[in-house]
Image 1 (cartoon, rainbow, N blue to C red):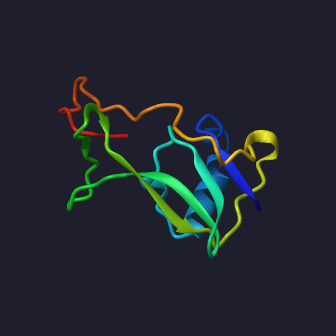
Image 2: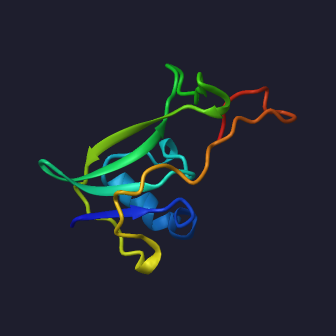
Length: 119
């Protein structure tokens, strides 16, 4: 596998399959924002999953990005891809060189949000 990118706009269309896949690879689907792509790339030791994950505090709450207080803080992570990704038809692309997300997870400031980062 040379590389595969699952764009953010495709994730909601295949949520059950992708949720099962990330769990099978040891990831918590609640840690992955749906506004960033998920990539499967060839690493030195085999295939890896490259994704963005929410940064959480010791109590498990999502953190506000210190560089942009209107966004939830995420960081790039990489894990071995033990289980291959599901077949999504033409929804996923074979363009791992695409970098950057299609959107940002916003911090809620509306009624009832208390300004906390949330999904």
